[in-house]
Amino acid sequence: MSDTFLEINGLVKRFGPFTAVDQLSFDVSKGEVLGFLGPNGAGKSTTMKMIAGFLAPTAGKVHVCGHDVECSRIEAQRLIGYLPEGAPAYGDMTPRQFLKFIAEVRGFRGGAAKKAVDRAVDRTELLHVLDQQIDTLSKGFKRRVGLAQAILHDPKVLIMDEPTDGLDPNQKNAVRELIQTMAPEKAIIISTHILEEVDAVCSRTMIIDRGAVVADGTPAEITARSKYHNAVTVVLGEKDAGFAREALCALDGVHSKEEQSGKGEVKLTLFPKNKNALLIEEVSALLTKTNWDVRALYAEAGRLDQVFQSVTTADTVEEEAPLPPGGVAMESDPGEASFE
Image 1 (cartoon, rainbow, N blue to C red):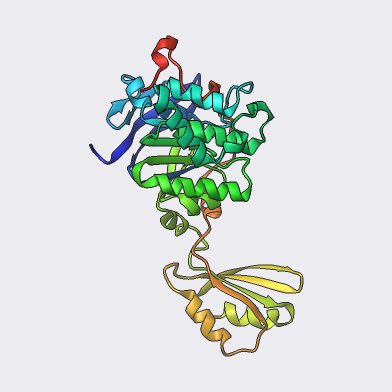
Image 2 (tube, one colour):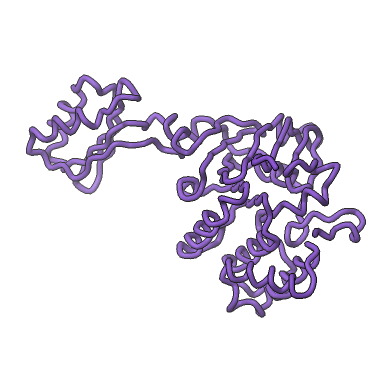
């Protein structure tokens, strides 16, 4: 089998005159964790719903491990785990009941169903709320129930919309560690507004805007596009800022600066004339010859949030259809909804 687990070719989705996704094409391979970024209304959730087989595309194709999601939907969906935004579930069920239901929908029976549920519960640390009604759970635990149903059948392709939404810092770290543990054997797509999550777990970053790709590469490649790439930041005591500003801006390698002041400090960010040059060396050499009150000095790799802002437009409204509880896309005939 090819290591390309997910292939998206020319994907288009229109809602009347509104184009939510516009000729989107990309592949995701085994071992890749793709951070799928974009402003609200960029088409992220719509794209993920089409990959999962819940929404039919207006045009284009999605293949999961060679299976066409439209023509061979059940075969493709057996290989997909999907955590939708909000992680809808049946609130009057307990996590135990809900995950048992999902296991049966996925085709598990008897001991195999229990083993799949137990594994998902253990990985998402749900044991002590397993028999509590879902409606009474905190947002964080509801999210973890949603994650448990997405990984219950150990899918090859895992699609997660805001997987750490509502989690506390410890829970976020646990989910990120789980993603890293699963990553070598899966193709994973994570849609997130938490940019630190990209650095924490993603091997690749894609930014879309108005349904089209505007940036695609490793996190390091994307941040290297930032105007802050190889910029140098110096934090000085206020009394030395005047002398330092003049001398630092006069350095041969400095093109321009940004400045912030407050609480007795001045923060100077110096931009290099050549983005590939190590301006930090020139700045460090000057500072070692002075007695200025230098409180911090560091070179910047770049800022993902600045690249994001530079390649995307203002938020737009994305038209979407609702998902059923658990994010499991049901056929018109409920009998065809079982996954094996």
